[in-house]
Length: 172
Ligand code: IMP
Ligand code: MG
Image (cartoon, rainbow, N blue to C red; front, side):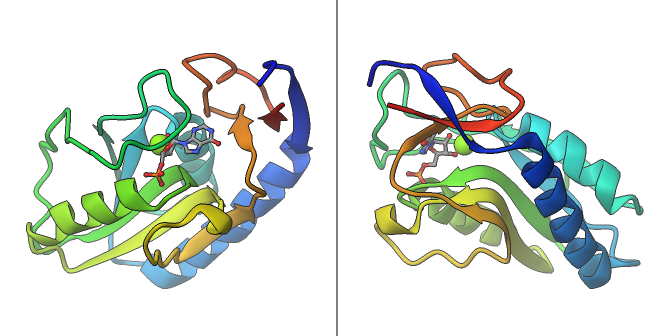
């Protein structure tokens, strides 16, 4: 990869997808006070826009899971690096992800949450690379399906670079 970013999804298309997802979440969770758990760091910009569009009572927290380091391939070994201080038991949980690639991170985290006996767990992801899944993943709220390219921008990084780009880009 040379590292030059090319636009894949524009900021306008991102906002339209977030409007749609927020509407779906509002419809499904009205009066349920859901707890949205963002997986750091990639979800931080998406979460900020999403909750303002959902615009109804909800709670937000974040968790840090071990990531790729500086490589571009999932190791499949995932660790919870920060613990949740919020009570998960009995809560309606929405996991907020930037991208589902192999699906291993999400599967691991959903298992981890289920041990805490939540009322429900659903998954919301801005992007998905279905051609890369190593295990079946059910995404309840999805922004975009993306091709098998390395993507950056709108919070998503390549070795900590390019998170600030306003559009979702791919790197060649
Ligand atoms: P998975 O466990 O393989 O599904 O990987 C999920 C995580 O890997 C995502 O939350 C991202 O942090 C990172 N990741 C996967 N694909 C990409 C990509 O194309 N660009 C940037 N990060 C990625
Ligand atoms: Mg991530």
